[in-house]
Length: 131
Length: 401
Ligand SMILES: Cc1ncc(COP(=O)(O)O)c(C=O)c1O
Ligand SMILES: [Zn+2]
Image (cartoon, rainbow over all chains, first blue to last red; front, side):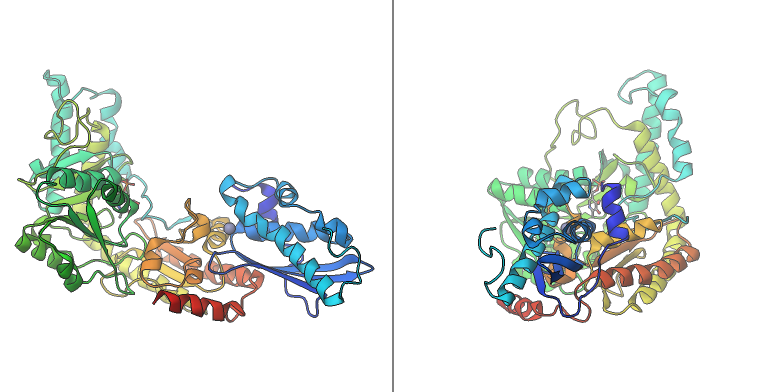
């Protein structure tokens, strides 16, 4: 049902855990519905210097959480904002149709974390509104 | 790696003795039981012997046993068959909110056809209230359908009491006994049931065969019309090899189930005690009046589908009522009906034990399970509570009451 890639990320999640004093946090999902992801970022020179996640959810939710941290690490904020749900799904080697909804979380959480960072920083940062 | 199958409520392996019994009926004794020559009568005879064995297991007469393709068909035949045959008398049906979908969905479909259905609530252990049931009976109630034991949480319903009431009030009574026949004693006379569903593959028989017990004199219409097989209630050339296997499984169960149930209860209770040592866990379903093979534990802060996958990596095959593992993406209706909060339904884990499971298997599960739960909790953002969601969750809960 799941690709080897997804299983690998589920079993050996990258960048997993809580981050102390993050520059931005994205919290998406709701325990009532089943999947919740917290994504933490540290920013240096407008790039994602460090990233961590915590996820309550199925293997698809955990695997896509893990893979997006690898995809986003080192990217500029604008580059990171361009990561789509489809990119995430492709990066884990596809998902069964019924599991597609579980993969939205990852891209949403990353976006929410970046927005949180920009809000905290004030609007002085690079192109806050146009993404 | 050790392989521990603990999903016997989903299906069971075919007992090797059942396999043996079935073998001749594929390419040796392949005659059609409806044919008159002696060769085909071998098949007919074997089929009727199987019918006797099923009847013996449930204390009915063999002429009251109708072979079907399985539990789902038997449930459909009982509910739609009785509803259609008795619609002049009334249009009201009473069932419970924790029935298998093979009962609930026919009921919902009948509602679209103009019938009215009452879905009884259950208490927090999954028990139907007999008093409440009695209150819901109307003059136009034609059928009561309450399962013997629940497939998810193992609750054994007060079928004898309900049967007595149904009999007094002259209402047909059906019970889905898919999870009990061959596991605990089932007696259609003691239970006062008019219709009872059995499935072959849940009792070490083959898949695709089951039976519906139909008490003599019950007004019921067939769903499948044709050559008039099975007392006109289920046309179509019979699944002879399957029926023979099913019969063999019934014969073995009659002999072995008491001892097996005692053995399973010990394993079950040890598994429950062991699993509950894990923090933030609880038992779904009752302690007493519980199926001998059912264990259903809830774990907070983690999700069932990932639990199942993790256990699978260790060779343990179990089940969950989580939304993310279901085709409908809805959490189990049974766990919801016993009052679990949505976020609590996600982390439920069901083990259903069976013949091959040993003490060593329970040890192995109890060795693996704490690590698996711990690993997933390390990934989860929730450690001690649902954090900032807690308030919103409480609010949601109070809305419902
Ligand atoms: C209580 C109950 N009823 C009915 C069924 C359906 O039986 P079958 O798979 O034989 O159609 C099941 C199987 O999951 C069950 O557990
Ligand atoms: Zn999911």
